[in-house]
Length: 210
Image (cartoon, rainbow, N blue to C red; front, top):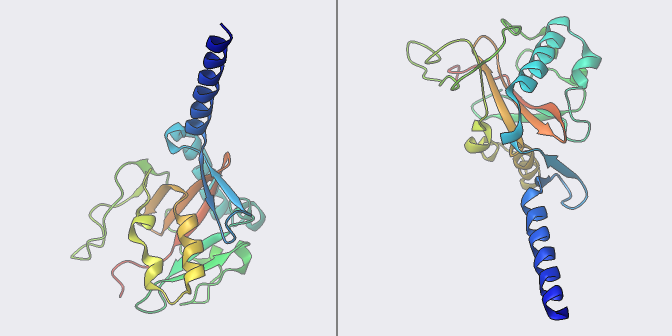
């Protein structure tokens, strides 16, 4: 009898450990692996309405040009990367406060950029493709999708950043849950870190301009 009880106890502990392990959310590490951990919620559990509400507040903050409010959308430890193209190669620059940003081509502050149609709410649909023919995109408007084209592109490997900087970008890029493409302005990448949404990358390059 004691052996049976012991066997059952071991089995229950093993099952409990397996369940706990499978329930753990994905953990990724920034700069010094082991020191800073981002807990990324499972994107399958994200309710679209939650993101829609977040994005509405996000876009309203840009329209109102509220620096302090916008900084709340930037993760205090991981910042937001801007992707620009001062030449043929892409350039990544990290900021922790939006008032520090100036674009490299025109020396404009963030809120002075041409955010045409930024108040337009995104449609949950396949993102537009850049075609650079007679048209820039294959469709126009504001679109959101739970996809991560930035991570798929690995474009940071085509910059002059050092290996450590590239690794840091790659770690953050893997956390992207939603991508929003507004064909009237820019492409925004959002990550669900902990239980809060943050903008982690903003691509302000002009398609087909090279």
